[in-house]
Image (cartoon, rainbow, N blue to C red; front, side, top):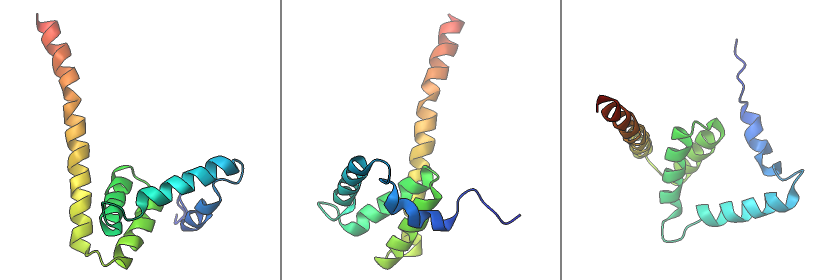
Length: 111
């Protein structure tokens, strides 16, 4: 079976997410444009951040879009993978930090 739930052509449809809510869609795209454009951080740095976030959030559309964006900005393969490893480490750390809740409950039960 070669079909997947996500289809690459759906990424092209993203531009129309405001179809039934045009004001909200326009405001999103305005915000998105400001947030992802060069500012204190370069467009290249923001693209790497976006790729790492897309990967840890498991968004195939964003992974596709930002892999291409990074490549178009001259980001090397190893730089992209390093950014993804930073994201993966953050997710692991976040998960382990929540283990404090488990430890608190265990310690309370042991009293």
